[in-house]
Image 1 (cartoon, rainbow, N blue to C red):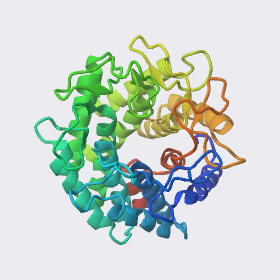
Image 2 (image 1 turned 90 degrees about the vertical axis):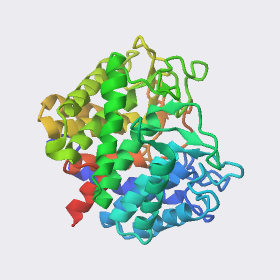
Image 3 (image 1 turned 30 degrees about the vertical axis):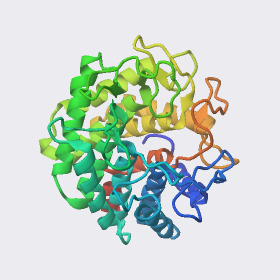
Image 4 (image 1 turned 45 degrees about the horizontal axis):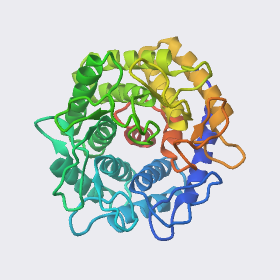
Amino acid sequence: MMEPPTEWLQAEEERTVAFARAAALPEGGFGWLDEEGRPVPDGVAHTWITCRMTHVFSLAHLRGDPEAAALADHGLEALRGRLRDAEHGGWYSSSAPGDGAKAGYEHAFVVLAASSAAQARRPGGAELLDEALETVERRFFHAVEGLCVEGWDRTWRRCEAYRGANSNMHMVEAFLAAADATGREIWRQRALGIADRLIRDKTAANGWRLPEHFTPQWETLLDYNADAPADPFRPYGTTVGHWLEWARLLVNLESALGAGGPPWLVDAARRLFALSCEHGWAADGADGFVYTLDWQDRPVVRERMHWVAAEATAAAAVLHRRTGDEGYAQWYTRWWDYIREHHVDPGKGGWHHEVAPDGSPSSTVWRGKPDAYHAYQAVLIPRLPLSGSVAGAVAAEEA
């Protein structure tokens, strides 16, 4: 049995959901929580936060939380209302005036939120999922390339001259969730196609150091954002947490495909996990995963992000379940010890989203505590069977 014990994970699940409730905005959707757990007083609903919270509360409802259904519905209402572009279709990046860009990252999370809401049988969830998938298929998924474009202006006339691995990685997660919610195999196959291009092609060709940024022709941009290395969504270099997130998703993908899953999926997951441990953990001599590395495996941004540690434990959990290798259990325990010492905030609630190399809270990249999604999934995944999606696994267990 891997540590921490099930009782602690259950308690942390409940604590995480309780902390996240404060993000619900009277105006609709979910806002950004500060370090104290209070919404930032601007009334802005961020689409990615609203989607992640809707996903979390849908899962919590499936798991029997009596207050979660109303919060999941609160998120769905915003995704059908103030965050949706009723004129041109699709979803804004936020409710802020003039924020009309249409980003693949946010649309991936609309699909994820709608998939989880549909699995939880929340009113309007299935209809939102149908609309979101139609939008992604029409505007973002490029059938010839087998990958998704990054973003558009509000009227869908100008496509951004950039392609990103991050948004495509979350499309893999979203497509697997959509397949579980709809039963449509095409979304699993599209997820496999994205993984094949970005991992077996681009990452393998780059010495298994995941490239994040590309031209519209999918040529690798190794120096992208060299002058803005601490960007929260498009940092320079390679992001170790994404190596770990991909490792988990590749195991999820193999599970979803069953007998049709190619052998390279788990092999690539194991390789990415091993390199994450070798180059990302304690890369500067102190415990914790650094945020980014350059192309010589040297730390660039040394702060430790909560989401990276969360994805590390999740990757270790699924790889241990898939392979039985006790080495994954050892890493899992070590990383949870780090999380409980440095990221979990027992006083104010939630997790510190960023800590300095010495383990103290910091805010170089992330301010406040806007995201419950990584922490919540981290405490659920070790207790769930292998599946294509978290919602699929929860729904199957609760059926």
